[in-house]
Length: 465
Image (cartoon, rainbow, N blue to C red; front, side, top):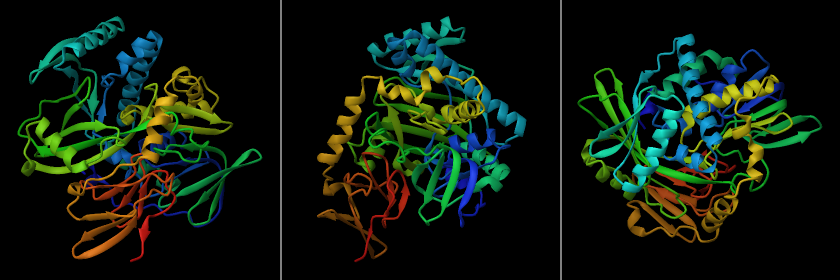
């Protein structure tokens, strides 16, 4: 991964004793660190199952924009006020990021970058035009544009940055409130408090708990699986000769997404495509090849490549806010975690401090009961659970799967794993790009030799030979 090389060599301690505190944040991505930043003056600390910044934030493209594929159009077709409020939230998030970077003097390569929403499909042009008219009505400076035989609209008050440099600063500033390699496996309500259990047997008793990990499995059974799906994307990075100082995304699938990142003498082009629900289409090497073909790249030019999985909510809005008394959540960012991650920290801060809650009318997690796409999310996950993905042997160069046992050969050594996810027993698929075992249902991920990396699973899948 491109951003991995920017992770700082600073390891915070793991939790080694029981604790009683006021507020606990679970998850060390951009949402968790932002929340810790805003709550810094209170009795609070953050736990991360691995290391800060090593999860979903590491796989982002680092765009800070409100031209987010088809989200504004979908919200407009439901309710104009939804679209107005969501646009305002994303513009507020951009402003918030800029203010933090300026106030703290964070060297995270924040750069103004024109955002383009493009297409080569006639039907999409009509929908993009509705977004154009909507933005004009909201006093946004937007214009029609053309780029590389694609047509659409462009705005200029958007940005890109290095998300890991941003997180690095927050980690250094807040390190005395962070515990790494501390995985929460269960949360119990005891009277008015929450008792959070770690995988090492320690407990953290907290009055308030904020869950900012990508897939919060501590909540009601099937609550998130029934209201969301997973989207997986393939990303490749090549070196460019020039920097056009813009980013773009296409309106409809197959998604084409692009931005540049300039680091000293190096200019990197970050290309993303093949966004899909892994329940139905899961061959990571093939998808990577499709990205290369879609952008007319060559495999020899690739300097970095990876895949990333995101939580997609049925109503296209993230879950940010109170779930229960003193229990809060921030997840379901629909691939737009840079804006919504930072914004969620501010929203939860305001809610905990009994201030006027920002965007409670559109982000409140209680809305899950109301929208109609429950059945679609539930059915999609059920298909993955019952049917599973039957991998074609041609997908794998160094893997054998037989009777739910996978054998990975690395440097003449064989590693054995159980190819069933411990979370809800969905079948795992080997990711030839990242060399990981991935769950297409709920985004758990394991190393090639079976060690847990991320997601709702509580266990490894390693088998002894």
